[in-house]
Length: 69
Image (cartoon, rainbow, N blue to C red; front, side, top):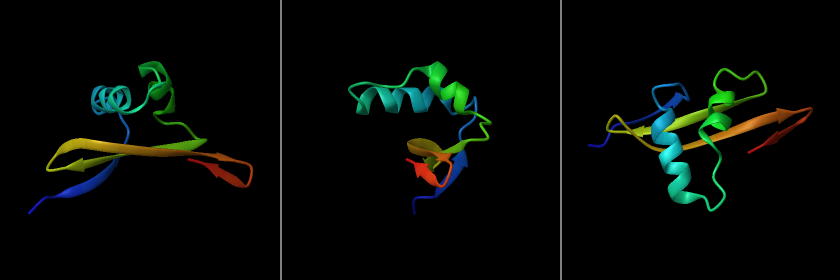
């Protein structure tokens, strides 16, 4: 049975998130852009782990009364 969990983006997950981003986005964010989101008060990025390994991620920014996903 596959074990899945979400974890906040942190330094240890950054290389995998950047690799997923480069493989799936024709205009990928840089590592520095993701690094700036770690610990941000304006939003949150979560990483999906399946069987202990990162398989996806998502995030949002809270802007006034909206959330940008």
